[in-house]
Length: 135
Image (cartoon, rainbow, N blue to C red; front, side, top):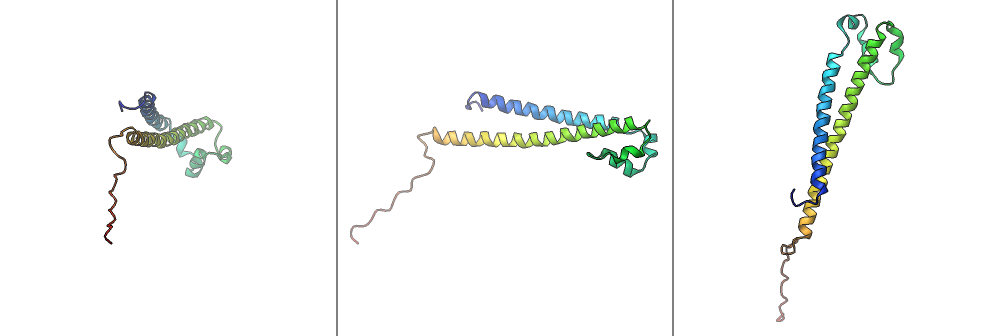
């Protein structure tokens, strides 16, 4: 990496740091979701279908079947899960971008090593057979 132009090692280091920070954020949000799950007494009052529907995005029909005193707990639980899933998707995209960035840098290194080494030929020259004038 020492022979790369100056911004490339910095970008690779920054991408590694971002990946680690996102991984820690996903783990922290996972713990946050587990700790903030619905209490057992609230969960026992509702069917599994109502609880499952409350976790899905773009659904609102479940709100009518929940007691208004428990609505805040359901909304908090739903928000926590959506934050966790959003961070998970962001981590997945970051891992993909991280791999792409390293592939581009490897291709760049390969390309520049072939261009800037005049003593070593990229494609070996095969000697042509001499034509025989006696034929």
